[in-house]
View 1 (cartoon, helix red, strand yellow):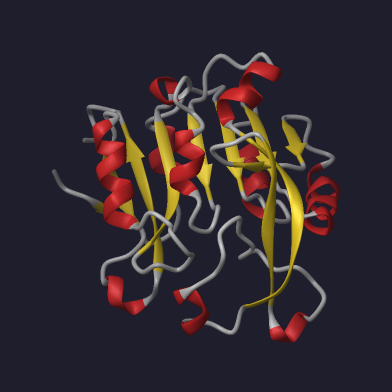
View 2 (cartoon, helix red, strand yellow):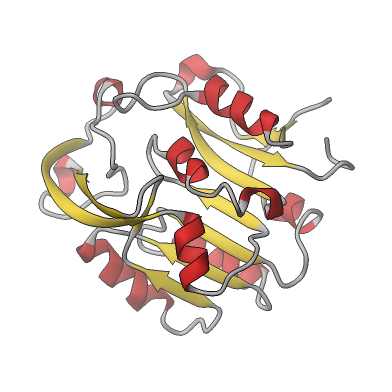
Length: 224
């Protein structure tokens, strides 16, 4: 199987996989840049955006309020429903402004790779995808977009009922233990392959150049 190396974005490839009206989950939406791109590419779809940090969530709502096919949720997807400690990230040049590298997992080796730091923790609400779907009468997901800083495996663990319905997953993967006790690239790949997914595209070639990348997994037989 030939793996496609993405140079720009994945939207053209995704349009060969997804229906014209997909149900899309975006976990770790930050301020909504990619959320708006998803809504623009699939105007007849439904995009559900998840962002747990209050200050960032407020910006996400503001930036997406004109797009009627986006719904925002101030909660973190994980493998449990309840509350959890969340490590808030910042950049030195924007002190006091939360950055997009916050995580439910304690940062570890990623601290060696950039100037992002974690000055505080907060308590956030968490929910499993299965619980959220039950509460919102969602019976399937077409596309899962994961930017959850080392917590992708836990999100998938919380979606055991929904996982068979998912056509494609775009997820950040780490090549080091960026966050404590996280599943790294090969482990996540092995798990998804056991669920019928195959890696079809990625945005990296040399893992040593940076500590993370992004991978598209799909069940689409024509692509895999």
